[in-house]
Length: 274
Length: 261
Image 1 (cartoon, helix red, strand yellow):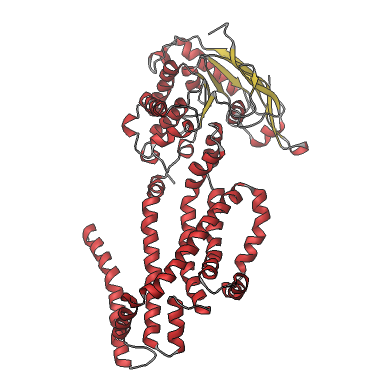
Image 2 (cartoon, each protein chain N blue to C red; image 1 turned 90 degrees about the vertical axis):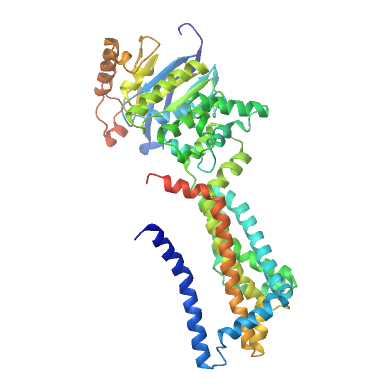
């Protein structure tokens, strides 16, 4: 994991909405690197602009300052090498077409043989365990299953980098554990690099190779820490390890030391204690 | 009450109420002996004589053709223009005053000019007239439907680099379809009104024409038969449309039923 070329570099990224005295500095100055094959979690207090950051990385938003480099080339629009999984699965899936149709949607315009498209769709749905539901409509499935469809759609697109924006924030705890393990398994299977945004500290420690902890808005990087837990993670065994508890407590303190989210303060304070 | 009995009762009421109204009408017209209100049985005999099927080909079919063509053109144009207007706020800003202006004009006010402009009282003029007024509900509903697309879905499409034509055809259009269908249903009932109006004003055939001629020659039974036919046509067209909509938009009913809110 070390010594390899960074696949993704975020350099002094800032995002400001509006201008002059009414400007809102959502992101101040954020920078970090992601190496090929890594799973990096981005954690921060709620309202710190995590989603904005991820949309800038994914080319959906243009940063006001700084830049995002994908293998050394600046990202100016959504790159073919990235796929984004949104938090709101029920709103990112198309209700008028089947699970198959949804996963197929981003592949239609890719130069692929007809049989290849079908294979990619079926393989991705098999990987997330939804083969039986391929001809169902998304709204006939549970929330967790719908998010699996969204993940399958992202995988079938064959991205190098998977961006995930609090993907499991709206599913219940048990399903959440299953989906976290699914992400770890898929990462092995597809060899994909993952940038995973979450506000859940346990989730970030459990999944990550590295964690990027953010401050309140205007957001900066508070700390970047390695997660030296054994790479085979297990919901029970890993979370029992003393290292897990230490890391969890450490990240917790970093975020807790940030002042509680106050919407008026978020806009005005330049920086909390550093 | 068992649900099955409840359903039977509801279906029974749906059939029994109109039958009771027809029966009351027949009894009243039979006892009233008013020339203005011929007996229901007389009207039905006249209905059968005229429409099943001696004048079906000469008058009903032309009317249906006009409705079909006018409605079809209106839907095609309304969707084709509604999508760009829905997507672009600049285009919308430029178009809205014109849409509101022409929509505000009562159809009869444009009937004379449609004849002058098109040099015709034939099919072209009638189809154009029907299409013009059926166009607006489809257009406005398409604009609203396109504007109402979930931003998450739009961002998803953008993040996957879906090309514009595919985005419009496979995402924008289906997402707006429930609302487009609501506009189409509105337009369909307008089409029947516009058909009668255009044939009433100047025509040589059609259901509206028969209605007008019967009135002018004091033939009240054929007049009533024409009125009954127009009602039946409107009802049947709406029913047909709903059946089609139920099939095409089955996903929408399921989706709404499954939605958490």
